[in-house]
Length: 167
Image: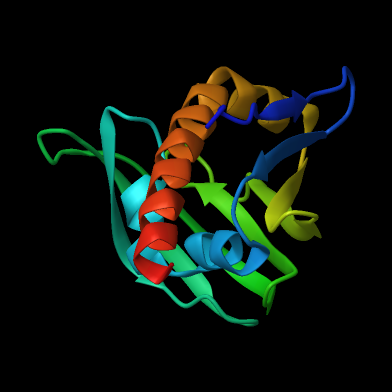
């Protein structure tokens, strides 16, 4: 199977980022991998990090917090947010905040749209709107592209295992 590339659209002067990727798996599976904390910890983030869920209530009105750990188990970063909408299998809308900044409130609003494609495939479009251009640029400079790309390679593998078990 050929790996699907992840496309990042980051336009100069705009406080937003689009992340677009297709998956060779059904929309319900891809949605669940983004909403189920037991699945999320298996693929989220870069290869050299682990994810630990503090709490993850993936429903409309829910909230979440998770930690990024080094391979040795040391906390490297923490993120939290509120889930404004979780509509299976179409959309997740949530806030996202990195807890390591000197002041709170540098929050993005992330909308994930899961689109069913022919052949039991899925197109995922993530639209993130940041409070400021500086916040957007800081996120892009943090290595988010590497983390997203490495995470989605792991997600493809996980979906493959889930598909073979289900099939």
